[in-house]
Length: 491
Ligand code: HEC
Ligand code: HEC
Image (cartoon, rainbow, N blue to C red; front, side, top):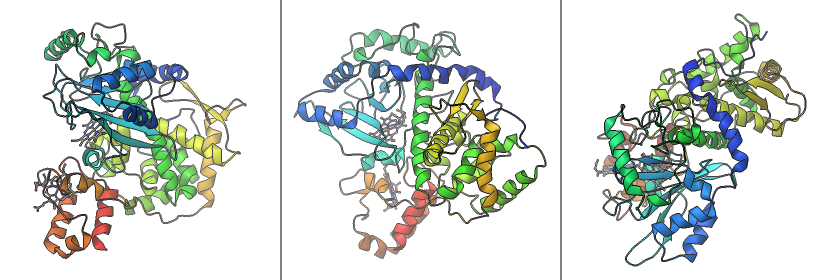
């Protein structure tokens, strides 16, 4: 019944050949890294260094985890709250794995000059992202460390928070903007600006603390287009390592959905590309497809229609399954404003990462799950569950095992994305008393609900597609956030 041995069948060979080196290199890297700096360490440092400056923080990071300072990219323009110019770019420092990412810029006229913005990946109590702000002050010399996920960050980083970074192979505003290369016969302006920056950074109190990798005159970027050295591909490395961790975060969220138990096997099969391995008019295939088509129709909605989300396998149920299990487009995309191409983040390994994480998760719950070996879309061997040493089977056996669950259980009503429980913290970031926007009584619900005009205005603003009218102005809300605000306003 099953006819091929390939893992995920997208067939984007050009991309595969460009990026085939990436995963292999990462496997080499992981054992070398000592472990990223954790929130608690930064908190302790901030408390014990109340009069420190940003430069002191950078020196501390460098001595605590030298590898951290050796992986970074530089924004010459930024859509974030922190300023960036070609000569004083916003540095995004992410270490070998992006478990700790922080940013700073280089000129006192720029917004956020006295701030270091941070993103931590937390494994406990469940895999999740956490944003923090470390603020310095040259006058009263007082370092302060924010609590987790300040409301002001949610205006752009979504709720629940996620990283913001573009997809391979264009990172707007970053140096190495196209494909991580800076060449003098390419974007001349970028080349000249970067060289000016390089000259300046030698004596700069902050940028001089960065560790520029060797092997390129435009380090950390490649001097050739399509450079084959991953070490000189910081923009791609950041996309890749963020997505790898984001897969863990999404699996944790999937597990919280009430339908996860019922659908986890079929979802995993779908992400592994099992449907494509079934032959044409297979009886079982018809059952699988008929089943899902009916249920998916009901949930075929959302801010960007699911039929319009970049390259997805035509004969796969994965989007339907993920949507039924509460995830939506903006959960996969880590772009500020998801586009149709950012579905599954442009396929930059993300589906594989998700499949690998899920299979691992299943193996912890089910000791009978087969161990199998196959080739990934990028041509390297994958053995699942991770760490398996015993003999492995073929992927087809794994598919059979996973599909068997679906054959026996009938259709079940699933509910799709659920409203989030703390939807208005995003609005508070600007609309609280002393905020940057007019005060709206989100903190006085009774008063707000008695103002019918305001209530209707909010309802129309949160769903508007007009960038000059919608709220928040910085990004479209996810479906879960809209549902959450509706629910909050209705009781
Ligand atoms: C106005 C929108 C906006 C706000 C508000 C915002 N960010 Fe960001 N953030 C971005 C964008 C856009 C990026 C992508 C890189 C860039 O353009 O500089 C980003 C990137 C980051 C990164 C690098 C890792 C990543 O996600 O790519 C960190 C760390 C970060 N932000 C932390 C924060 C923190 C902490 C806050 C709140 C104090 C915050 N941000 C508020 C827009 C914003
Ligand atoms: C990044 C800051 C920011 C965030 C976050 C934000 N707003 Fe606003 N909001 C503004 C600004 C600035 C204005 C005033 C200018 C305007 O009307 O566009 C405004 C205006 C409004 C108004 C019109 C108020 C009036 O009296 O005319 C409403 C209603 C509103 N916002 C609702 C929301 C809701 C609901 C959220 C959360 C989903 C939200 N806003 C998040 C900045 C923000």
